[in-house]
Length: 464
Image (cartoon, rainbow, N blue to C red; front, side, top):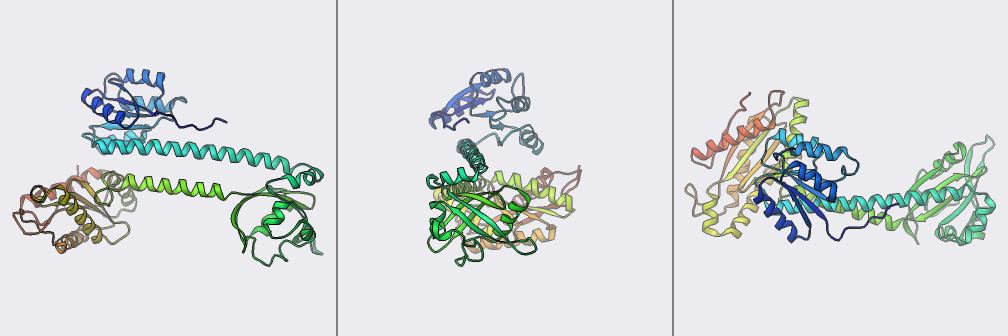
């Protein structure tokens, strides 16, 4: 089996026909320690991939000779290149363009103009995810190989098993079935146990022999259902592979157990897998953290624009299936540029954080989610909410922000921070898309700002 080894320098291919983009990204990624190659057209990109097989590709869509969709589709169809993650980096920002990018095999989509910090973060996140998957895959393959070896050993004769008991680092034991007059198994009796097995259950090889496994187990070591599983092994000749938590006063740990039929009984081996369980937990937590960081705006600590795009598409599909209303609020901090100019960017960042938290406090149902939409703009997606309900939420949002009492001497309409809010609502259908809802809410927000700010404007979605 091929061992996993992390490269000293990961290779990234940038495919873009704009030299300034290539220069910017090349410089940025090189500073981060990556090896960088670049191509300005599709044929050149494929040639470089064939020659170098990069670890990740940043791919524009509109490039000469072969477009980004075709390149991605081709690379995903080839065994040698289908594993390469492709992040689309494009000026096309329609929902259909993004959907097509994911359909052909892209793992992420960044809209131009891009934030360089965002590009670096997404590149790092993708490469970190790949490394974790490779490590975990190697670990699983090793475990499978170990289980096969254990199973082969268990099929050897009882005499051979007895001969190797004392030298085994795993717990090894054999049990005989105890049957009632009707022939039903009612318990199991210890036949043999190696030192590891005896020590695990708090006995010795001599004291365990002949002892009943379940009836005389007074310390509650064995997990629920183990007796039924052992009976199944004996009666059906199936192989049992089970992980369980062993809990006694002297030992609390995870074991992996393998049991096979042996005569009218069974033989088992078990090993401590606490370290592996800890690795699995660490990997799970790391993946959860990566997912969290990829979906949360670092400044405001609410969901970011990437999560907004995912969530509105998800809820659009759900409300379309259920024929329920989907509403959207777009909020803009009034005269925020003047606020920044007056108080400075650090205070401005603090203001955005407070506003974001205030908006999030206004959103009470689990499915209602607040997002940082961009700059000083925020969004709230409200599934199963009609226009009237959405306006009530918008009023609560404005109330929460007013109660923050964030002083704004540069505002032309108030002496504290205020919000303009655009609201729209629709029951999704085949003639509309999330873009229509966003466009309507954006238009309503524009009207709110034109008509004096610090107000809520509702606009219906225009069909067609």
